[in-house]
Length: 161
Image (cartoon, rainbow, N blue to C red):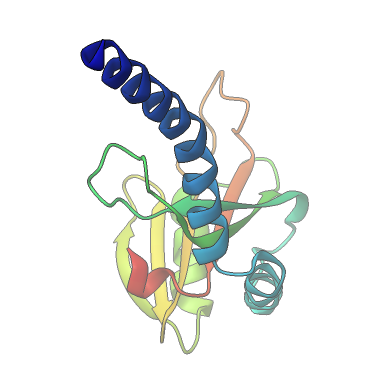
């Protein structure tokens, strides 16, 4: 009888843990994440201050959170920052080398990181801020991004990458 009672108690405890852990995990991630609105506002300010390739026009913008990897299969990963990205349509015939050369020349005050003319990507840092330029699909036949350049910003990306 005592064994049966202990088994019943263990079952109830297990069920309670299974119900409480997801709530605890959600609360942990929610309470320790940076406040999204001011973070994204700072990203937007940086994005607005960047040079725009001549003749380009913005067609999309979005912000999304990213998580730190705690090495525990994602159970307690939490949002540690937000990236804000914009897509720009560039004039027909623009090649990625032109776009990367433009940004290398016009990103005054930013320190270049990886500059890859062959693949059409570049990144820059200034203090803790990080900017990435992706023109890798420009001119690619069949790509839905063949006229799109992506620029993404993270105000703390230089220290969180």
